[in-house]
Image (cartoon, rainbow, N blue to C red; front, side, top):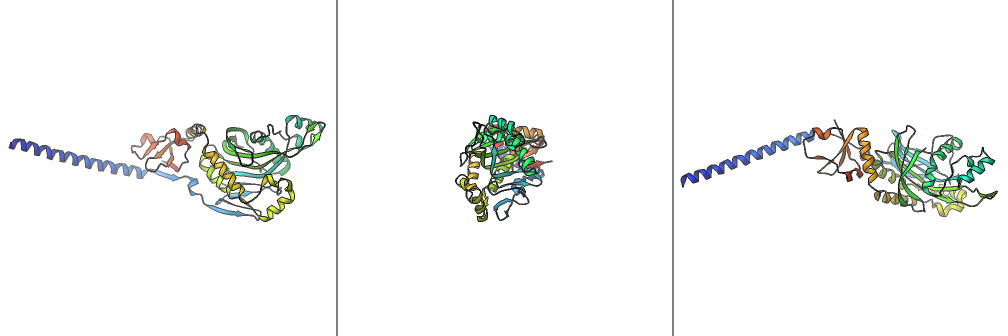
Length: 350
C-alpha cells in the first residue's frame, strides 16, 4: 500500500515538474516571439497620414490633401471650367475635372469629310466620339487631349491617357454617363489606373451637304488616377476631395451667362459632386475582384514585395521579398486572394 502511494506521489510530482517546465518554456517562447515582433520595422502608408486643407479661389472651393496643388489652365471659361488636383511629389496621383468639353465629331465620316474641306480647322483633326457613350468618349480621349493641349491651351493640362483600356464598366452615373474603371500609360510608359466618368450630349443639328456636323459635348468629366499598383490606396481620398467641390455665387452667375441653355444638364451647385462621388464609390465597392487580385500580385512581384496581414488587427502590409522565409512568428501571415482588394496599412522594411 505504501509502495503504491509512493509511486502515486512520485507520478504527481513528476507531472507538476513537467507542466511547470512546459509553462516556463511557453513563456520563454512567447518572450522570444515578442522580441522578434518588436524588431519588425513598419512604415505607415502615405495614405494613412493624409490631412486636408481648403482651396478657395473665389470661384470654386474644395478640400484637398495638405501640400497638394491645384492646377487651373490659363485659358478657361465658366462653362468649360477645368482644374487638376495632384500630389506635387508624384503628379501621377490626383484627379482631373472639367465641367464641359466640346467640339467632337459625331462620326469618322463627318470628321473626314469636314477635314477634306477645311484641313486647318481643329474639328477635322479631332478623333470622333463614336459611339456617343462614355467609353467612346475615352477611347478618343488621348488624341483629343493631346491636340487640345497643343492647339488650344498651349500647356500640358489635360491628361494624355496613352493606350487607354477599359477594365470594367461599373454602371451609370447620375446624368446618364457611365463610371468606368480603366488603365493607361503615362508619359514614361508606366501603367496607371483610374476611374473615368463623363456624360456625352448631342447638342443640336448642323447640316452641311447632308452630314450632321454639329459637334458633341461632354459634361462632368472626371478622372481619378494613380499608379496601377497604388490606385486602391488612393481612390477614396481622391473621391472625397472631388465630393467637396462647391461653386461660388460669382461662378454660377458667370456660368449662367455662358450656358443658360445647358443649366438643366449641368446643375452646377454645391451638392451635385457630393452625389456624384457617392455613386463613384458605391460603384467602386461593387467592382469585380479579379483585376485587383491579378494586378496587385503582378505589381508586388515587379516591385519586390510579398503581402502579409496582421492576424490580430486585420491590417494588410507589403513586406520586403523574403520576409516570410525568415519570419518565425505567428502575428503576420500571408494574405489570401480576397485580401488583395483591401488597402494596405503600410510597409514592412528590412
